[in-house]
Image (cartoon, rainbow over all chains, first blue to last red):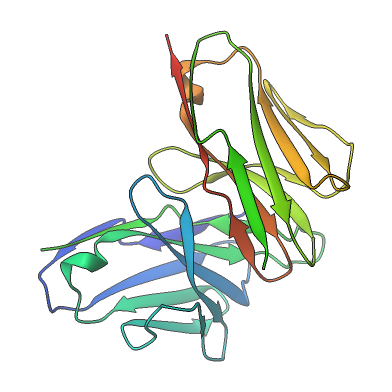
Length: 118
Length: 109
């Protein structure tokens, strides 16, 4: 199946710093990628939809100035958590939608990035 | 608003037991229903269901969809400790995925 990678897989940072997380589709082009956040023992929560070449669409309650999303190419989307605080500590997962002709049009998840803000 | 409800929330069984996980949904623009298994990291894909009444099977796992009654079930037979995970039911309604809350399955030796 299709492969999506995330980098880094684990990051610890100090409060007030910014952290960038990359999401790459390795063997298909993804015009649409999604960013999710997961709290312990909870399901995934959609944060935003990242569209290549245009602005991301944020879900209600997600601060777009705090969670900056850039989808500069068909295989790369980045999420930057700006001025991170301890409450931003979470597991961030991206997914990419495979619309290649003949594919099953499903979404493939990256392995996730665990962010810990001290 | 699209909605996905999974039951039970949590389940503890012994190896060899058979379990059935339930997923009911409400949707305005159904495209598919997906089942994922999540252990410590990101979810891994199990099944995609688009048509009613057609069972999808992979080893000891199987799943079926009822689009009239708006639900799906995931069956696991002869459970093993490696089946312990959170199982997510996910609704694909076009460009959006809606996640159920998950069922946490624990299989004891």
